[in-house]
Amino acid sequence: MSVRRRKRMRAIVPTASFADIAFLLNIFFMVTSNFIKEGHIELTQPRSPEIEPMKEGQVSVALDKNGDLWLQGKPCPVEVLEEGVKALIAELGEKTVMLKIDKDIRQEKFGPVFLALSRAGAELALIGQKAKE
Amino acid sequence: MPLAKSKSLFEPELTSFADIAFLLIVFFILTTTFITPAGNKLDIPSASADPAKSEDKQLTITLVGQDIRYGSQGERVTLDDLRRKLLGQNFRAKPPGKRIVIVNARPDVPYELYFEVVMAIHGADGVLALLEEEEKAKK
Image (cartoon, rainbow over all chains, first blue to last red; front, side, top):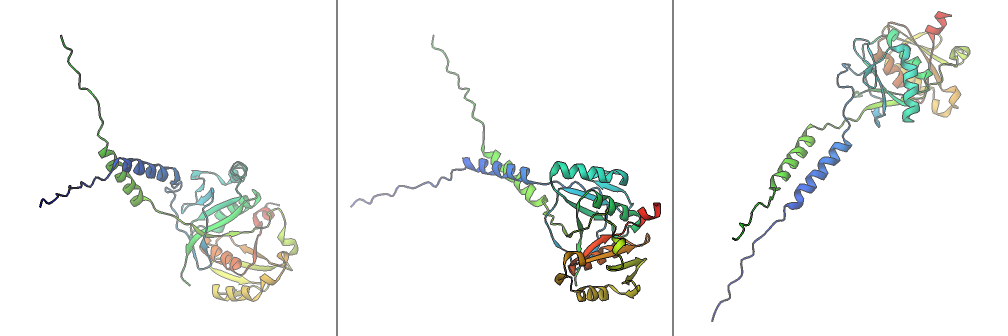
């Protein structure tokens, strides 16, 4: 009796679409990545047990450890902050301003910033770090 | 004379493309840090409104250096005492106009203290009001 020889099946994995998938993933990452605008600003955030994680806003104001003021990662004198924030609110249609201030900055420096933002009609989001209760 | 067939069909090697693309993905995955900011949104009454007009009716917290002084009597309190006193005010049961807390910070107050006091007010459902000391001094 003749034994039928099984035909050896060669497993072929189609790899042509791998490149497409990989490039689509790359495009997704590139489009959705939000690069940090304020990486160059040196400040230590204050801590509080009352704060919660929140959604990142589009407008950001920072007062660094040297007392320098930054609007959207660019230097901005306090005298023009109100106008600058008003323009950004009108342009972006978002009232929330992410306010980051170094923990050691004194009221004489941060007080005028609060007032300017309040006058600009901004909704302040004070950014800090969660402290253990 | 028979013409020689040219075998110049160009077939690019695509297999390495996938490797490059996956390497890029691995790079993005490893270098991406997801930043979730933490903080609180504040409802600050317009700075043009003068909270000092109704100062006698509103709760005032005065900050001097590292000291917290509570109420019109200026009672010295710690941050924990302040949290307890603010929760005792039961702001949640009050109408928005009665929830206002005026924070009067002197020029030497560090932001760290101011931030903790403001967060304590927010945590107790109070509404922060800014006092325009500068403006008054100018006048």
